[in-house]
Length: 337
Image 1 (cartoon, rainbow, N blue to C red):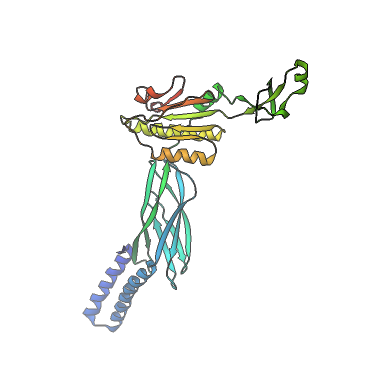
Image 2 (cartoon, rainbow, N blue to C red; image 1 turned 45 degrees about the vertical axis):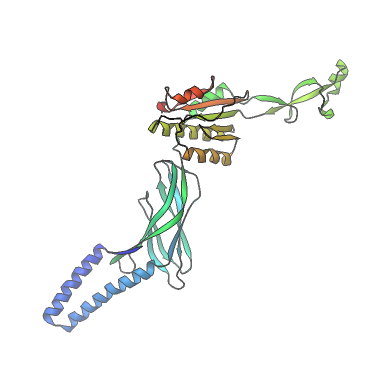
């Protein structure tokens, strides 16, 4: 959809043209008629060139990084000129949520040009690209040509992040990574034990075996990062702002734990993200948290393990979700932030 709008300069030019027209009719002076004709041709030329300048334009939107609510992020707007011969000049592209447009001085025929714009989203969730507004004052700034371009696709905005370093430091101090015995991994000698059927003969400690007249095998220590399961309270009744804070807490905990090398699992009323580590795993957790909603019942089963720490994120101290949290879990309350 295209529209043409008179600019401030265009309105002044139109008023001046009207006055010149009146003067030409009143005086019959050929020179004034010539000036009026020239001004009128400028207006007509502005309309024709403005429409030509805006034709054949299309837009692609890309984001090269994770987008978090409340944080400024960069969106790349790739404007394409589909005209075979004519370039497009002085084009601006406006994005909802950005106060400064992306500006393209010239886009050659059958070429494209990318510009970055800074934008922020106030809430997590899935945002449809929908319509972007493209406009230009080319050629004489008398008219502002506008065009809405529909862009397919969507953008997933992750929850707002909060500082949870103090709470995590307490957890780390209470239960840092532990050395677990394992027969098949690790480099440091952990202990000696009696030989069992299926053990690797190469691990036999011959000196100790000869001394005690019983086969002993070497057991090595495998150092594993502490496993943390984050339990998110997303059970009804609606928590409104408290629920959004709880989601932010869960996302922040996951991000900080993974940055420290921990293996993280996420559990909600109906979804479970299994243990994992690294940037890709963090994005899997954030994908779930970006779209998570409050549910009417708790359908997930919590399974405790000796080598994992349970961290519950509850909306408040009276939350019904607290009844599903195993005893001994560390609890964070959204009402405290």
